[in-house]
Each structure stands twice: as C-alpha cells, then as structure tokens.
Length: 398
Image 1: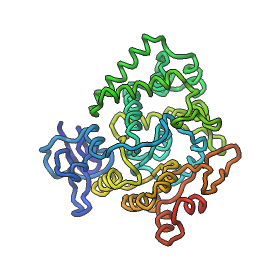
Image 2 (image 1 turned 135 degrees about the vertical axis):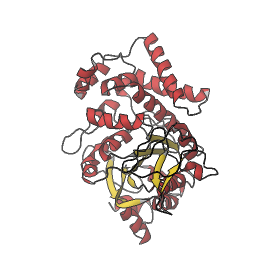
Image 3 (image 1 turned 90 degrees about the horizontal axis):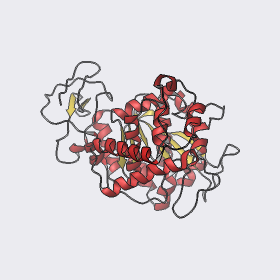
Image 4 (image 1 turned 180 degrees about the vertical axis):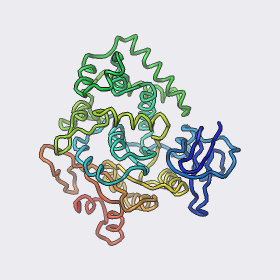
C-alpha cells in the first residue's frame, strides 16, 4: 500500500497513521512491523484521527484492522449475559449533555453492543474502541461492521440485521421516518432460502475483514444474527440462566426511546447520524477489543496507543461495569487504567446505574436504570482526596 503524507490534514492511502510523537514532538509514522510489543500496538488504520506531517519514508506494511484488533486484545473472560442489545432504557437521557460538552474529534471508548453507536453519533469521535471482557462482544461487532459494509442507509442496515427483504428505492428510504422503517421490519423475515443467502453474504463480508476466526466463532455469529432475525424488534437483553426481566426494553422500545424532553436520539432515528457511524465503520475506525477494564493488558495497550498518537479520550461509556469491577475487587485498577488514559478537562464517563446493594435509586419515574455523565477528572480527584473509596461512594455522590 502507498502512503502519502502532507502538510496540514494528512493524506493517506492505506492504513498508516502519521502522528506527533510526545517524546520528540516530531511527526512519526506508525506502521505494523515495529516489534517487539508494545511497539506493535502503535498502529491505526487511517489518517483521519490526527493532523500531522509525515517525514519518514514508508518502508513497512501498514497495519490492518485485523492486526490492530489482535494486537490490542487479550484473552476473553466471562460475563453472565449475551448482551445482544442493551437493557438501559435511560440511555438517551444523557445525550443533550453530551452534545453540549464539546467532545468532537477525540477518542471514544465503550463496552457492550450497539448503544455505543448512538453515543458515537453524538460525540463525533475520530476513532472508537469497544473494549469488552467477552470475546462474544467482538464477534457481535464483527457482525455489525459487516452489515455496515453491505448497507447504504438505515433501512437497508436494519433489513440486513433482522433478515427482512431489502427495501426498494434507496433515495426514498434515506428520507424515511423511523416509523416507516419499523413498519418494514414488522412485515416479517424473508423466506428461508433468502435468509440462508443473506447469512452467506454476511459471513463472506466478515471473512474479508481478516480477523482470524474459528468454525465455532462463525457458528456463534450465525446464532447471534439468527436471533435478531427470529425475534425481530421484540428482542430483549438476556442474562445466563434466566428469562428477560419484565423491565428490560425491547429493541423496538430502545429505537423509539427519547430523552427527558421527548426527543429521539438513537443513531437509527436520523440518517445523518447513521451515516457518521457508517463512515467510521467502513474505514475500520470502530475497533472491537477483547479486554478487561479492570485488567492490566488491553486498557494499558489502548492508553499507550493514545499517548503515542497524541490523542485524548473524549468519552468513555462504561455502562454499569464499574459495579462488577468493584464486586471483583479490581475497581482500583480500573481507576489506575483511567488515570493513564490521555484526557482533557472535558473528558467524560457515561455510566448506567441500576438499583443494587449500594442503594442507588433511579431519578426518573418509570425507569429502572439511570444514565449519568461525570467528568473523568472529577472521579480521579474524588479518589485521590478519599471522597470516592468504592462504587457506593461513586454512584451515591452523583
């Protein structure tokens, strides 16, 4: 691949990134093939993340999406849910605050499935990393990326995700309301032979991403996709060993959910927001990583990558993972990992809180979850001052 670096906005074909080095403040080109670890981690897939001047000649093969996924990831761990969709009905309550926060152009980190795409659409990062302890989450995001590769608009994407016949007239569907798209999905799945053909197309698109996958991985992806197809918009979050709880929202309800002022913000409610996420996906800039937020490997690798690139965290969606980190006794390590991420005074954590033994009560009537935004510096200073000694102090102090 050829790489051309210029002045101002860097021009790159291929996947090398030119970025300023923190040590020398001189531009540095980062390529795959910079052994040993951790230098191998210092790669990205496009020049859209940063503006820099590249002075080094290109002599090494640029990194691929698959190599970046593999280099940043660690061995997977266990979590007791499939997490195909969110169970956080309150997830849109924070969107107005995020839109006012001036977070554009930074680095987004998140966990879990496609609620991340809504937060990405409204924080407008240059690149995103979805770091989750479950390897199945990586497989799910490979499915999502393949669908973005195959779809031109929201209606096509949702039709592919739910195994519905492809809508006709692309231009008309780009202007379609969310209600009209939902009506199309509600018509029911395509015939079995069409679903089989769709699954083959999707698997071929996933293979082209280059991430090494086993037969079992493809079987898991097939199971995930067929679950969307069979359950349609009534799909709900599930935990291992128990049925969905009555208060878990369906995919339909998450689509139609609003903020406290009645405004819809789901990334599929607006074509412009969808296209922003689609562009990042097609450029390989939403990167799934297998990693433990309370571990010492993947988060450290992501932090070092940001440091070397001169990039900073803009938003970190942690869901309610901090609760589980505290239960495992690794909340302090999470705080250390967070402190090591390059950030600004605007960097924020987006979290979801559920009633628990820590005594948190939802703040909005009718919602079992509460979604909140906190400045990263506020959390870190609270820990340093002894005001936040654990999860209970964290959530009850907001």
